[in-house]
Length: 323
Image 1 (spheres, one colour):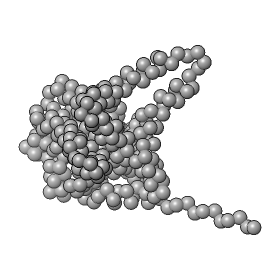
Image 2 (tube, one colour):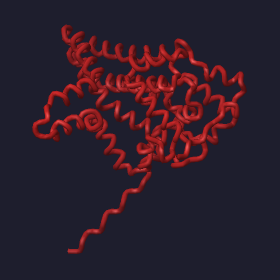
Image 3 (tube, helix red, strand yellow):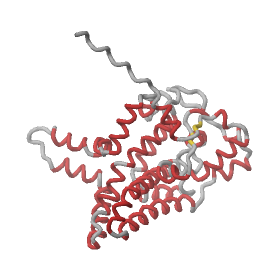
Image 4 (tube, one colour):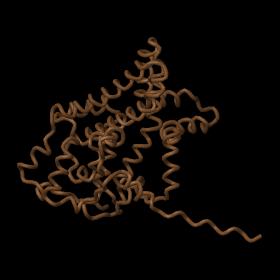
């Protein structure tokens, strides 16, 4: 079982340089969590406050903004999985589990295997990057499935309904429903609370339109783009730890709606996985100043990565049969 090569911080940083990079702030991670939820709440409030047709015009923009922050909440749970959200592990884990997407312990156990075996056969995330490059048509189909909710349905709900449909004769239905409710208790609680708070004011649409639609459409699409940017077209069994993952330049708009909370600095994250996300830009600048950046796997932008990931030629069409 091959373990991915590691990077020793002392190779690149003096103790004086490394100490502030590895330090976990008692407030920055919590501020990012608060920021994510505040952006979601304010975006919803603006849409609710807008009159008439302005509301309809604003909804597509709100879906993009809220979907981006939904990914941001997941990114911050990822930081908590690395114990990088807060210096107190109890606070780190409580916030990471209760104020982000939940399931912190299970995710941590899974995700640390990804780091341990990055791009090796035992990497549980290798299945996400192995198919690339693919054709442009294949990528287009995947994005259409994401934006039309098909990916969301397949990942979150189709298994439940398949299990119900395939249950044996005489097998009671209620245990399956009870298990499904328990597994989705956070989702259902959020739905009930949000509808209960907004419906009396005539804003019944807040949960289905401004939470569920972004979660079922924009979020799966940008999650796919993030996965592609991070590991697509990275060599399997790559021996160089500076090339286990890709860092992608993100402009201001991309950081707002596709790559929140410094998730685009993924090469630096794999090199130094316990560095808090808010310190990764500083790591990047120092690596560039030290001349290390050319040896790292980087991309000038998400468009470049998508071109690379969809560069597989289309198979030639078979010649028409002779009449």
